[in-house]
Image 1 (cartoon, rainbow, N blue to C red):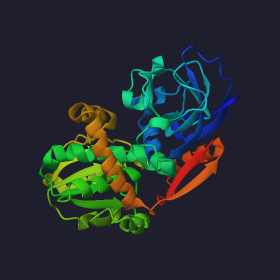
Image 2: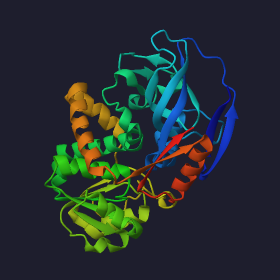
Image 3: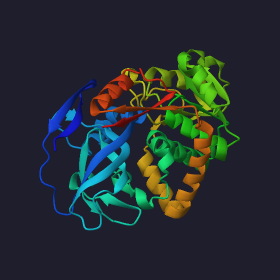
Image 4: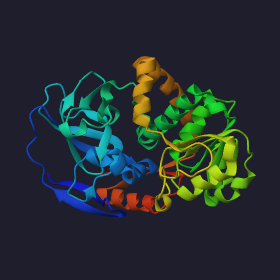
Length: 360
C-alpha cells in the first residue's frame, strides 16, 4: 500500500508538498500503524519552527532538505510482527503528517508501549510513548477529538503552572500570556485559575481575537497587543507563546524591573520569530526557553507516575469543563487537507475558535 506524506521545506516553512513512497517489508518485532486521525494546532507550527534546534525533524525521516511535521493522534495496527500487539488494536501518540508509521514496541504494558526505533532514541522519551486505548485511563471515546486538539498543549500549560508555582511565581502577582487565544495559553490559564488563584491572569492577543479570548472566561484581563501600556506595572512573569521578537522586546522594555521571569514556550507568529532567545540586550530577566518534555520527566520523577497522572487528570477535567463549547471541532478528510491546514496555520489564517481534526 502506497504511503502518503506531507513534506515541508526546512528552509522555507511556507512550502509543503504531497509525497508518495512505497513501504518496505515490516521489520521483525515491528508494528505497522495506519494513521486514523490527528489534529493540526499551533503546537505543530512550533515543532516546525524549532525543528532544527530541538530535533523535531528527527522523529520521522524525510529526504534531504525536507521534513515531516509531527502530529498527535490515533492510529490502528494493520500489520504486526510483535507477539504482544495485535492487528486491529488502536493507539494514541506521536504520528507523522502522513498515512502510516512503523514502530518497534518495547517496554510493553497493558496501557502502552515505547517505540524503540533507533533514530528516535536520542530524543525525549515522552514523544516515543504510545497509549494502548483498550486499557488507557485517559481514553474517552466521546472526547477523542478534544484529546488530540488540546491534550499535548494542555499538558504543557499544566507543566508551566507547576513549575511557576514551585518557584512561588518568582514573587510575581500577575502572569502575562501572549497569543492568549492559543490552546497552550488557554491550558495554562485554566490550570493557574484552578491551582494558583492568587495570580492575576492577563491575556495578550490580536485585536481581532479579543472577543474570543474574553469569551473563554479564562483570563482576568484581556489586552490587545497595541494596548500593552494599559497593563499595570506590578511584579509580573511573562509566558511568550507567540515567538514575536518585537513583542517580547516591548514587554521587557515596558515592564523593566517589574518583570521577574520571562518564559519562552511556543512560536505562533512565524513571520516575526527572528531573534527569539538571542536578544541579550533586553531589560529585565533573560528570556528562558521552557522545554516541556524535560519538565514532564522531572514531574513524574518527583511525584511518581500515579500521583502526577492523578493531578494532571483533575486539572484536565477542569479544563474541559471551562472550554466546553469555546472551540468547534472541524473534521477534514484526506492528507491534502492536512497540508492545506498546515499552510493556513503557518500564514496565521486559522480561526482560534476552530479545532481542526484531519482523518487522512
